[in-house]
Image (cartoon, rainbow, N blue to C red; front, side):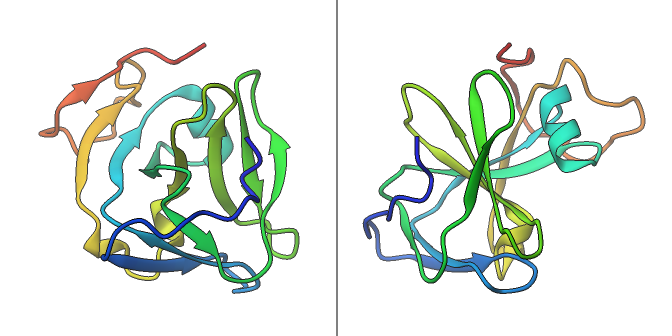
Length: 143
C-alpha cells in the first residue's frame, strides 16, 4: 500500500501527531487498536526492545502537510519515514492492506491511547516487563 495516500475522515474523535521535526503532520479519527510488538522485525526497525503501534483503517485519517517517504522494511511490509529527520511514521503490510500502524510516540498526546495487548510475545526480551498483564496475541512473527 502507498501510505502516502490521503485517508478519509471517519469518526468524530480526532488525534494529531507527526515527526520529530514537525515537517510531517497527521490527524487520525477514532480509537486505534494499540499494542506492544515484541517481534524481531519491530525491534530492529525501532532500535528498541519493542514497538508500540496504533493500528487504524486506511480511511482513518489524513496527512496535514508533506507525506512520508516509503521504504520496504521486510518481505511483507513497508515503512514510511520523514526525509528530513528520519522519524518512522507508518507501517503497512502489503496485501491485503486492512490497517496502517502509526508508532504511538508520534502522537501529540500518546497518553490518551489505551494499550490493548501484546503481539509477537513469544520473543520478548527477558527483562521487558511492561504490559505483562495485557492479553498475548499472535505470539509468533508473521514471517
